Amino acid sequence: MISIIIPVYNAEKTLKRCLDSIKAQTYTDFECLLIDDGSKDSSLSICESYADGDDRFKVFHKENGGASSARNVGLDNASGEYICFCDADDYVTPNWLALFAKHIDKAGIVVSSYRMIFADHEDERIYLYDITEIPLLWMVLELNGDGGFLWNKCYHADVIKEKHIRFNPKYKLYEDEEFVSHYLSYICNSGVCVSKEATYNYYVPLDFEAKYASVETFDCSIDIYNHTKEFVSMDGFCHPIYTSLYRKLFDGLKYYYYHHKYEEAYEKLRFLHGLIPEDDTIALTRMTRFYIRHHLKLSHFFFKLLAKNHKL
Image 1: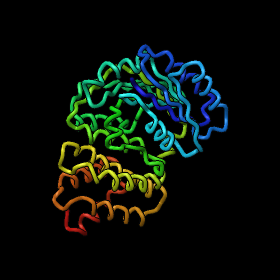
Image 2: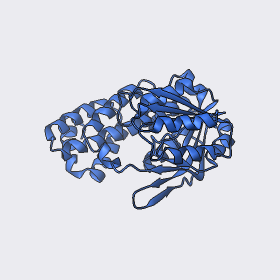
Image 3: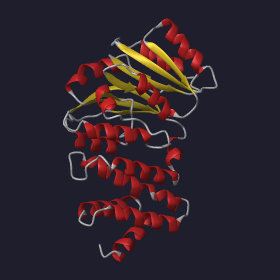
């Protein structure tokens, strides 16, 4: 059985579309946990109406605490062998669960292709690779910009429970990416299944770009880095997960520049530079290329610091 976890907050305009798509699944051995996160509209009553007519739908109500805390309630109450997530403003194709069920017992994780629905167009993201290793999967996800997407993946519940993988409610950004990277670090030897079938329809929020364009992005990334480094090996099988955190940290510096906080940008860069081991010349080379290619106006901070520390 598959447990579907859906956090719900003020989603009355899109919730029925989402839940109807869940009811239409060709694979029927599932439970759907609807976590009402203190909604102020009719979301809770909509959830209860689906539960009244179908005992596979289970409703939980909690005070508002954010999507992370809502998903944790779902994880605490899930009884399925496998876990997947859905957002209340999205919808899935009828074979969404069937695809997961077909492959999940042979892999540590199953990843499906998906569609991104913008206000004025749709973008189909199709994986054209046969991926069987975690490092390659993570690099593909990062390059595609969807390392943290929860909803196009199916997870083993026993891994999540045994390793007590949870969402950190204090993170307002990247909490989903942290969850995915932690999960992958525990299944490095279990294999991966990636499908070309696009089974998930993701509605891109209008504030998607603005949400990440702030200095809070950097501070959140630092917290996630400190948390993740405790169990992701620098030179182990999951090295790409670790190095992707470097990239995200350095990438976050651009927002200090955009907000004209130049001194803070330089101090943050000094801090980040201290995280890179002395002998990790690959990381230094990667960051140098990264700045030249993407953030030329910030590169003088980086080169100045390297020269000062006799690393250039």
